[in-house]
Structure formats: C-alpha cells, structure tokens
Image (tube, rainbow, N blue to C red; front, side, top):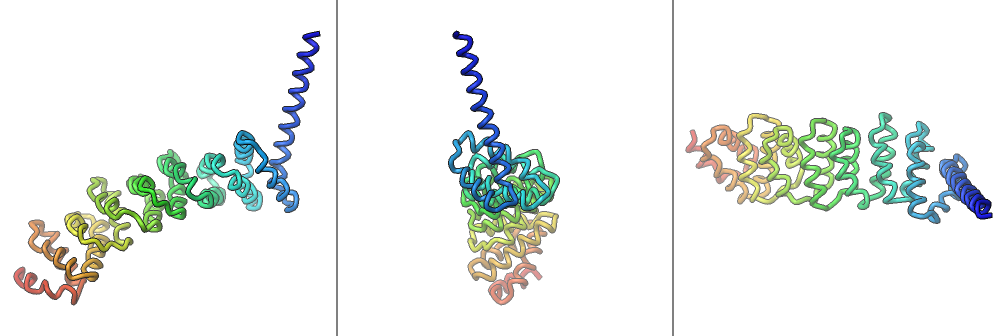
Length: 287
C-alpha cells in the first residue's frame, strides 16, 4: 500500500514538473512571437514569475537574443530588460558573439538597464574576450556613471592591448565628462606608453581649467612620442588662453633644465597669443 502511495506521489510530481516545463517553454515562444497581441499578453506574465522563474526564463532567451532576425532579437531583449538584474549576465555573455548586430542589441539593452548594470560592466572590462571588453566600455560611456570605481576602471583599461578596447574607453571617459580631473591627469605617471597616449588624448578633450595640473602636463612634454606631447600642448594652450595666471605658471617652465620642455613651452606661448604678451621679456632673454 505504501509503495502504491509513493508511486502516486512521484507520478503527481512528474506531471506538475511537466506542466511547468511546457508552460515555461510555451512562454518563451510566445514572448518572441511575431503576433503583437500574443507577445504583449505573454509579456504580462513575466511579472508573475518567481525570482527563480525569471532567471530560468532569462537563460532560455539567450538563443533568441542571438537570432539573425532583428525582430526576434529585439523581442528577447525587451523581455530581458523587463526581467532586469537577473538577466544582465546573459546580456554580458552575448557581447562575445561574432555577429556585430547581436552584440549591439545586447549593448543597447545593457545601456537601457542603467545604473544596475554598472558593476557587471566594470567587471566585464577585464573579460578575456575583446568584444566583451569593447562593448562594456561603450555601454559605460552611454550610461555615464559618476562612480569613481567606474572611471578608474576605464582609465586602467586604457593600456589594453586591443585598440578597439582602448578607443572605447577613451570615448567613454570623454562622454562621462564630469569626472575627477586629478584621476585622469595623475594617470600620466603611468610608465605604460600606450596608456599615456590615450590619457593625453582624453585630457585634450576635457575642459580642464585648474592650473594645479599645469606642472604635471609640462613635465610630460619631454616625452619623445608626439602622440603624447601634442594633445598636452593643446591643453596647455587652452589653459593659457583661459587666464593670464595660467600663462605665468606655463612660462615658468622656460627655465626648465630640459631643452625639449623649454622649446615646447616657447611654442605654446606663441599659440596662446596676446594673452602671453607678459612673457615677451622672458622670451627675449632666451635669444
């Protein structure tokens, strides 16, 4: 009798699991249906799922998210956006797909996620896959996080071996814009040449007005690589045009021991123009 009872219980459990599985599979299909009414109705059911159910649904939508059909990808992305936090790992994982359009769909969805996606994107900057790192940087640039951790992670990634990654990180830092200037300027102390080139480029695109950074900018004018010195010179010219106080700080480098720095400063003062008239006597002494 007991054995018959156990068999009955197992049979009931199996039937329940079967119904649950079929229901979940049916929901997956309806969520990417080409029929608007069916798809929208299925979308309403997502809210009623448990946390576990949403995670399972997110995992099941990984394949539709990679589909060549734009509509199917978009529908899957909409559901993952609705699921929220629990779908982010799935979106990150599809950033490594070979199909560019698939990666863009996932990147755009992560951007729509906003602040909740930031910790995942920061971690993804260290992923082994170059596509994951590149698209994560682009996504961070569009989200424009204000956290110091995000900015420092992007600065650190400026020494990445892949050009697509460093380019994306540069763009992201420029888009974020409102960052602690000290974080980026003092990164010029990095010995990595690739990092310095990218940092110099970012600095030239930011609106730097603080004269406290002039000494470190001038110090790096002795670099042999023009990809470093030209952007820094442009920044110093802009600083000089902004105020005569800045010009005084720049012109003090005319007495620097390094010949390359002195020559660069002479050129910078010339570019500043009328705002640097006060430096004419010092320039005459160098003749």
